Image (cartoon, rainbow, N blue to C red):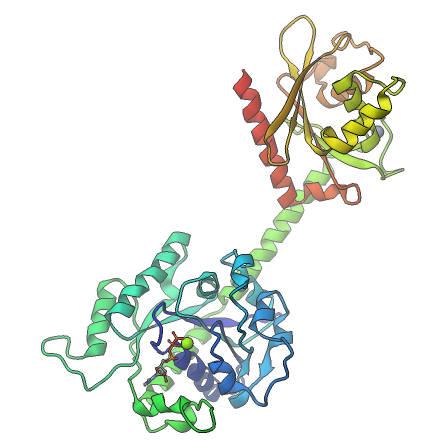
Amino acid sequence: MRSYPYTITISSEKGGVGKTTLASNLAIYLKAMRDDLPVTIFSFDNHFTIDKMFELAKRKDDKADVHALLLGAAAREVVHTGQYGVDYIPSSTELADIHERFKGPMTLTKMLAESGLSGIVIIDTRPDLNILTQNALYAADRVLIPVKDMPSLENCRNIFALFDQRGIDKKSLSLIPCLIDSRIKFDGIFKDQKTLLRAFAVNRGYKCLDTFISKSPKVESLNTNPDGKIYPILTHARGTEVHGQFMEIARDILRNHDATEESRACLYHTWLIEKEARKKESYLSRLEGLVDRCLICGSFFDASPDGRNFYFETSDRASRGFLHGDCVIEMLCSTLYGMSRDSQAYGTARMVVSSDKAGKRVSLFALRPGGAQSILDYRQFSSEGEELFQKDVEMPGFDSGEFDGVLDKLYLMLNEALAGYEGKMREGVWLSVYPVDSSHPEAILHEDNYRAVRKIQQCIADALSDKL
Ligand SMILES: Nc1ncnc2c1ncn2[C@@H]1O[C@H](COP(=O)(O)OP(=O)(O)OP(=O)(O)O)[C@@H](O)[C@H]1O
Ligand SMILES: [Mg+2]
Ligand SMILES: [Zn+2]
């Protein structure tokens, strides 16, 4: 069976509140209390605390780090076995350039969902709410927000607001009073720092852990020593209050972890799979109704699938399929320049049409209603749906079902695509034709590409209704 991680993110916009200390020591306590549970930690920060703490031996410069993870490397390729049984992903100084490409706020959730990691993943973030932090926030089953004073408490508002903006449930978020100096006492009901912070938090509707973390000179000294190492609280500050507090936090996390049947990563993955299935289903149903031959020359594609350079679809979607590049170009030469294959300047017209504009743009064919003789409203649109060209084309003989020797291919296409009962054209229905990559013509029917087609069709519909 596939495994999914349970993710904990430590975040606060305020610097120096104890995020990294919490993240790294929590990893150690969790592992110590549950030996068989994999624990993986990484940090978006660039001061390498995580590395100094967990690195077993000086690492070769192998680039298997957080930067690689964010660029899409498989988690198993960048996770290193570290000290105290904790796995870690080395930090990177190169995360600044990643912001540009890291637009989606759910990218990390997706990565974790597909990572195959199990157990608990802990993410230490930078003191800001940049796109990486946002990703870490949304990916988390639990977000711990250390607060040490009023300004850091005020700052929490931004995290809660992010969740509100996206309509994400805030139940994963909880504050934890940190760096609490127990010597400080107040008069009145808020007798000390933690009581005061907790009261303010609750008053603002924020959930707050029952546990807090005391300020301890011993803990503070753990990252300053002649070895240049960072020592864990578990091994080097057992005598402090903080040790008991970390035990309590770890217990709380484990309880939560055990009670969670499906972590965010798991739910997201299920959702992704369902979405893919739906996409595939709609893709297949779009493939289903395709006309099996080129409307213009009539030859079947299953015999010779090559040359499908254009996709067409009528506005009522009753007729959809591919067209040969050659057939469309020839049809456009006659529609635009009144030239058929035997015309003198046909070669030039053909070159203009295929290399320049028409062949690369979306073409619209709409029959203009009323009048003695049908007129074709021909237009070109950009792939963004912007109208670039318009021409009215007279169609002698079209209504009476005759060919005129020049526009024959156009007539054929329109008749095939737009004919309704008893040879009458379906009223108000228009036809649009899209250039496609002939090596994968069906790709236009994939969800994302097809969405673009729909968008252009909406632009066309708007443009047509403007004129009426
Ligand atoms: N319980 C504690 N008692 C005393 N000092 C602590 C405690 N926890 C952390 N510190 C000290 O506070 C300082 C900041 O801690 P830490 O680096 O964990 O904060 P941070 O929120 O990760 O900071 P940044 O925002 O810069 O990443 C460090 O010097 C650390 O040793
Ligand atoms: Mg930090
Ligand atoms: Zn053809």
